[in-house]
Image 1 (cartoon, rainbow, N blue to C red):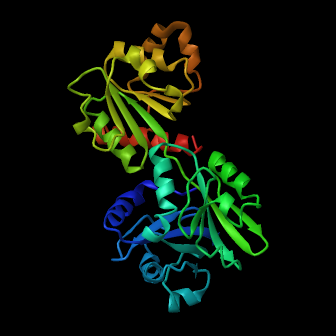
Image 2: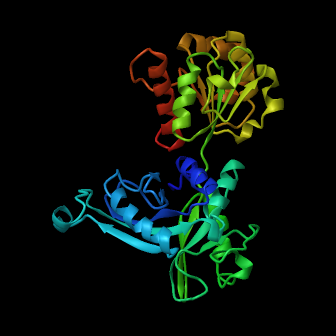
Image 3: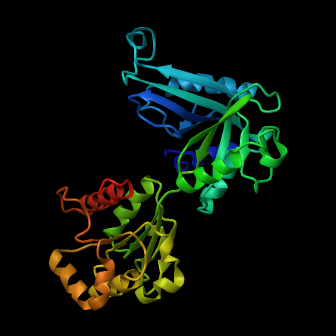
Length: 356
């Protein structure tokens, strides 16, 4: 599922502050070879600036023209691109991807309470699972194409965004599908007589715990932030635990390793990377992580250092079996802090996407 919201937020916040509507593009279906898959998002402003990608930049300029019409009229539209024939090379955009894409463009702005972006952005800030429904086809005048169905606990109040209880969709299986999509992170379709709706779950970014805030931790945090991961940095040294050194981090904490479980809910993290360069601190971090459930624990340093730390851990070392990646990082070559950061983030990326 590809509904990554983070890259869209700066443009959304800028235009919302100015009271200007935008067009949200949602990739609904793909056939053949395409750059992105269903759930991918693009946000387009009235001045043509956009955030997010549906293709590799091939069709975005054409999509902007459709977006201007949607912003001006408030009427959503479905747009289809098909690059599977030679006609595309001669008369079309020359995508050369040999695939087809169906995209829904809908207006989001003051008239509809900035939905569904307002709801998704709030859920992202709270790191809360959610999903929304987008009407793609409809013969119901009260359920227009582009209408947004929000979860039951979300207040409505706008013409095209409502709580389910106040809509013709109330008797449908949409409630169940929204909950299921939110939990499993999978797009879905709901079709009833007279309307068809695409269920879009929010792709929550993984929460990463970086234990050690030395100079080589800075590029790790920066690369992770570029991927829109939520990074928490912790260190017991005040000179290192400085938020100014980690502008892309979600939190920077000054904390002693043994106090970590009392300060953070460790089970909420997808990964932890131990890289304080201080043997006793790394040992304390591993002691804090061993009883937990964080599925990926990376440890910086050579194998001989790993074995020493595991020996010091004693019986607790067994609790890390299958979760510990040490030395952390893929063997990509290079010894600079940036090269090491790339190796670490690449391995973690592979793990998070189930290919490691």
